[in-house]
Length: 526
Image (cartoon, helix red, strand yellow):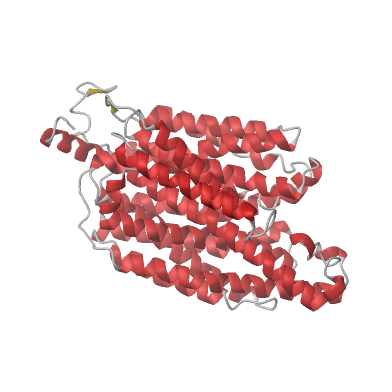
């Protein structure tokens, strides 16, 4: 193993703690990059109908514009995390931002839906890098004891990017001199600024190990996960849940993942080391992260549709109505992070977050077509507060309990499972919603169901329908949305159970680079 650094004295660099001023400078670029990469996943939510119309796309294309980006992001997170343990973190994070810029430019200038889908894949690969690497870089610079303060800010940025995306997309679509193409172009200048900021402010030692990345394992994980995500995205829309397509995709995906586990168990440098899950903290935080992903993405996607269909709001107003969740998440994430740094204790905040998120899901399961805006805002704020206290602090708990040389793979594994949980959860819950809406519309409207927009899973345009039909459709969508949150209640309860079983350990006072130098001193051949 050889170690090189841009600074004199390669072994001295990790021991010299990065000043708070330099940390804040480097984090400014990371936060900008994180925001725009997460925004890419949600900003198109309110723009999709216009995009499909302008590019003459089908309902299948509608699904793939969203799914392709999420697939690429979720499937590549472990690879980015593993490479961060082997190569220059600075180079990797700039590469991920460069890919994101390229994908955004292609998407914004696309002449047809085929190129748009390819561009979304490129965007997703770049976003996967930012998702995995941002927390890895933070852990390298900042001790866990201090990390809560900064992790809280990052959690807020992540949540705001997720929840505010539909609002920004709705405003861009509704602004005649901008249009849907700016949903993709919007983030380009900010991403370029992030690249420049990181070039000037991020200085980490470059550690090179004489090892190889397990590309076969990475390929098998990507194929297996993508197959399951494709199934969860298309089941209930393109084919029935109980069809042979389901058998083939689920069976094939599980076989490939089983093969991936076998390969990973024998690889000298696996993408996701299986020994990580012998660590109780890593296993429990992974379970909780999956369920938090369902709550966060599900709350955003289905509430946006509830606002527009059940309450009859415009895309812009629907985006504005999501602000209570944004503010709840922002405040709780930031305050919890500051208090964790001050007191050095984290489990109480995770338990409080789990209880609050469970309460938010339960409250939202009571909504209907007549729920007042104020009450709805309170319910959403409660959910946002819970997610804010949980999301990034789960990563902090895991990072604090693993060796420094596993920080990258641990962080990326948690990001990977959270993203996968959100993607599969949204797809599965979306299929349940479509099924309930179709059956209730047929039951209550009879022959008028197709004309009411309930046929074939199509979302109705309530502005073109008679008032008596609109009233029924709005009630159906409100009831179905409430049922989804009711389904989410036991899932959220499981997240709380996982958190309760976590064992609190004192937060480490050394940064990732300092811990790594200490580990090398004890075991130089590592």
